[in-house]
Image (tube, rainbow, N blue to C red; front, side):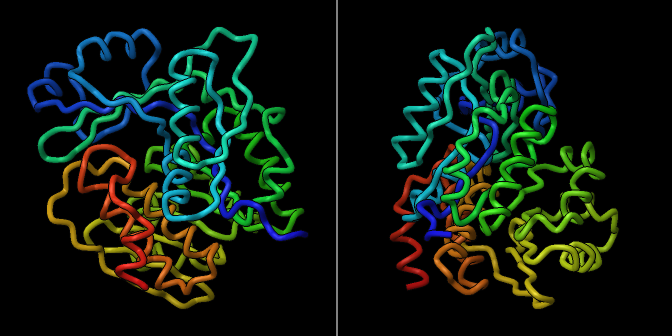
Amino acid sequence: MPDPRLDVLCIGNAVVDVIAAADDDFILSERLDKGSMRLIDEEEATRLYAKMGPGREISGGSAGNTAAGVAMLGGRAGFVGQVAADQLGEVFTHDIRSMGVEFTTPVLSGVSIPSGRVLILVTPDAQRTMNTFLGAAQLLDIKALDEAQVRDAAILYLEGYLWDPETPRAAMERAIDIAREAKRKVAFTLSDSFCVDRHRDGFNALIDSGRLDILFANEAELMSLTDETDFDAAVASAAARVPILVVTRSEQGALAVEGGKRTDVPAEPVAQIVDTTGAGDLFAAGFLTGHAQGRPIAQSLRMGAIAAAEVISHYGARPEADLKALVAERLG
């Protein structure tokens, strides 16, 4: 195969993040579970949006955030996701392209389903409570894939959140097959414990199929996936089944296991944690960019930690500082 044109191609839910500050009284009055993520319908999305305070609208979604992070780190990034031909679809498309991400997925046609959005309420303790209407994002079809784009990416990165509905799952499965045939690497993130709880058998089957090269998880997701009660036992169990296992542990840092060798790195210092939205997504961006550049595992982990630390120091899931400069300053 020729040299890849893209470093990382991400596939995931194409949604617009609407981020607004909220106090605990608002969370209680809306009977929300602070720090959780819930799926809502279009009617509830409209109702809650009307009651929220002033917010910022930016292209989001887990894999979309990762693609933006790769681009901001100087990597060549692409994203595949479904939006509708509406205002939020235009916001998503313009925003992610403005970050330097290649986004060419055709808009949804023939169906009157609006683009997805995540209403994110951030409380003073930096917890984010997410209310997600997935809309058109859940209708990503195999026909929307640009197979040449998949073949042109060194790493295909897949978002576990998109595993729920059958249509996009089939598109992701096809993308995996294309990447494997092209001798490219495939990375997968478990996304959230509730995803693992619903799809444990499917995720384990995917891992055991030998079609993944890199698996991302946080501590809770890993424990759920392996059904272990001891963290080190969970690491050992998962690491034996995938070439590279990457696990994030919040303030305890992160680790990776490759070929039986475990590498741990501490969390990067943060003056103040403002909003944890996107921390895992940006960590993945840093690690994947480092890996695509051929850096050692420890450096790739550090890049992930640097990107995650920057994004939790302010509102929103997109870095505000120059990530490429931060990495150069701290890693050289």
